[in-house]
Each structure stands twice: as structure tokens, then as C-alpha cells.
Image (cartoon, rainbow, N blue to C red; front, side):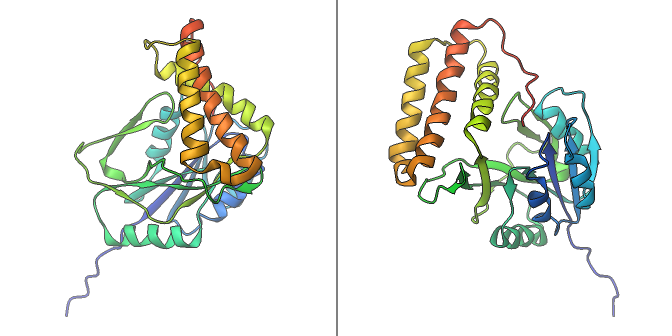
Length: 262
């Protein structure tokens, strides 16, 4: 009788962080089931690093900011799991998501998995908002060559035809906690969005068209209007990002790419 037993596939969960002391504990506690938990910190001035280490995460500090893709590539270098899942510090893995994630890893499937969100904004869950954003987060580690891109960085795979699948359970996402936080994100994502679209036509008219279209789509067609004041604010800020990225394209000569995501 053979005594050989096939080793089960392992999972690494990686988090990029910068000044996340107020929420990283909940994030990491929800990910403790992983075989390896990694935090790559971009030079926090608060207690993010101490909390991450206290939660048992392997924590690495890279304060020489060169962009989101570079930080993700650095995290990838420390990963040892057969699969790697990228979790943001403002996200929390619920029981259903954990169960589905572990089942995928155990099955040893070869694919890329996208996630969708349960959105929380301004202290309220946007229960009726239809989240259509699907973001690639779970990969077979050996198939990821590197990440590229200024914002919403993209994984470059060894097999470009790798099958794409979707994790059914939503991931809890604390998108916007305060108006101040949203104003700061407005600057970050507007300018990074402009940098990503460098060379394209910009201006006020183009921005109004993009922003208005975004607001109408989110607030009416995605049912943001059913989510009260928090839903209105969420849709408005996303629309303003769309407006200002094209305003910057039309009127700014340079777009900073060194804005750290906080």
C-alpha cells in the first residue's frame, strides 16, 4: 500500500498598505486562514507595520515608492503559495468568500479569478447598488510574470489565454469612510487616471460627458438612488473623478504618477 499523499495546494494572501492602522487589523484577521499572509508597506507613519506583525503577517517595508505595480511585484517576490490572492487593506473576507476561495485552491484549477464587491460607503452598506466591477485578484502564482500599469495595475501572465472565472461570493469593501477621505481619493484617482490616458483628448466638455454618464449609470441604472445619501455621495465622487481626469488631460501638462494609494 502506497504511503504517498499528494500535497495540497497552498494559498498566499498579500496586502499593500500605507497608513492603514485604523482598519488593517480587521482586514488581516479575516485573512488568517491563508497559508502565508504578507503585507508590503509603502512607508507608513502610523502603527500599520506594528499591527500587521502582531497579526502574524510577514511584513516588508518599501518606502521608495515607484508605483502600485512595483509594490505588487515586490509582494509577489515574497509569495511562496501555489495561489496568490491580492486583498486591499479596506476589504474584509467574509465566511462565504473564504469558503469559496479555499475550495478553489483545493481544486487546483488553473485559471484567473475575478471578484465583485459588497460596497460600504460613509458608514452605510450600499445594499441595492449593483456592483458590476470585476477585478482580477486570484492567480496561480507561477503564471504571473509581473504587474504593469499606473493605477488599476494589470497582471501579465505566462499564458495570455488563461481562463477567467468569477468568485460568486462578494468581498466586503469599505470604499469611502468620510468626505475628507473621498476628497483625497478624488485627487489621487483623477490624476492617476489622467496619467493612464496620456495622449487622449481631454477638456471640460469631455469631462462633463464622462462624469455625467458615470453618475447617471451608477445612480439610476445601478440603483444608487435606493441607497440614500450615502449612495448619492458615492456616485457623485466617482463621477467627479471621471470629470477631473479629463479636465486634467486638457489643462495640465504633467500628471504625477507618484501618488501613494492611502
